[in-house]
Image (cartoon, rainbow, N blue to C red):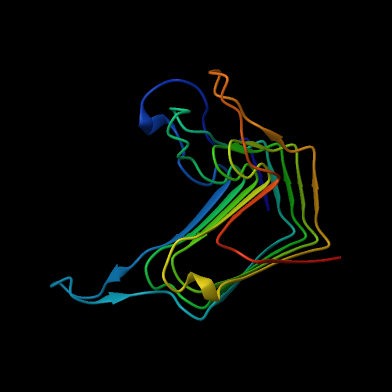
Length: 185
């Protein structure tokens, strides 16, 4: 698959901007299973592989730099509620030249248990305010059980974005909030 030059950048109303995943956004939310809205069903215990894909020159930059509220220029994965025990394998991808406020190439946020493996992937020439190449966020009470692994991957020429008000990114290539990363290769 190739996801090339998606999203918008510039001034205008909020409707003109992709707030997550300039190239691709995966978001799990609760699904109401009754008319009373008293029960919810979540996607759990499932494995997903995103492989052999190109995410090139996609943009999820927000309309207001002060808000820093766009996520994952190339790829955004967001799990809300109890969408637990899901595994995402990001394998043999090229994520290049993407931009967002958070996670220029890749953004992952989880409120419940998740396992993420980034393998044999190149993330290059991406820009962001936080997490120049990758931003990983744990948001929930069970998120301490999450597992993140990065192996045989390359992060090169990723750079901070600027909002034109002498405000520069203060984080590194990988921004990890409440996460223990396991590196190999």
